[in-house]
Image (cartoon, rainbow, N blue to C red; front, side, top):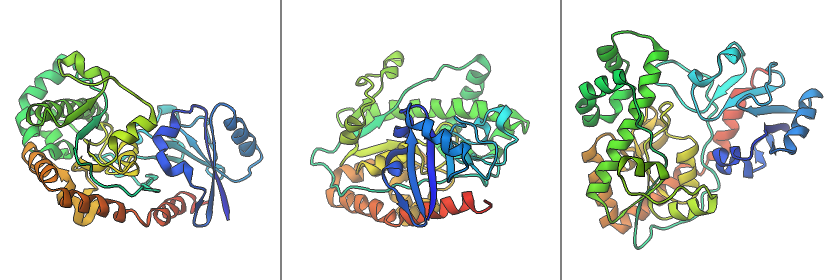
Length: 330
């Protein structure tokens, strides 16, 4: 049995890790949660005594020696790692960047998924913020390519698209535009859904009112979020930081018993298999067709909900494999 302990100071990281920290055993690994303002001090002691292996969230505390553990950047890709830490060989990230080949992905899978059935009065749920403030250069480019993006959302993950419009292969510059355009795309999708499914669509987040879109107030209570997700159609547009099917938001939806409906990601086929065409979309037409099918056919919705859960019945073994890849060189 190998001891692995999580180290982080701030409690909000519990939310990002979802059910992952609620389990102790992943095959040969015993996972100890040492997150929080007091327990992280115990983690520092274990690090100093070289007892077990540490996973430090966002390099707080920083782990320089890979024999002691890894620095795990939960909300981003390699481009989100601070410049002064990039040289370290034990950095891992949670989200794939579509423009660079990354091997240091620590993939966490949904676990402890509750049995759930689609609600009689099914709602379409999105919980998240809005930020579409852009500079003049970004605004000009968005107006040029907006129609092309709205015809095929996945085009933002294509290098050829950015070469066409930016004319250079500066990954860090592309990444700045990429993040802004992902948020602009989210805004366009929300507007579309408000128009098409106004009575069924529940939008949570204070920011939307800044852009004249009605929404309910932000609420970060985990129990409130789980209750909203459970048995409803839950939207996920992917992370603005990259392109991954499984990350904090999507795992949270699945672990709450929600029926996830997700924009296509670069790994959609690998993650979803036969479910891909039933729960992923790449344009407005796909999205509207799938939502109407789900709203009008409760048996279909329950079948998909069941198969989403079944898709991750082997998650503990998959997480053990993820841990193997991290610690294989130690």
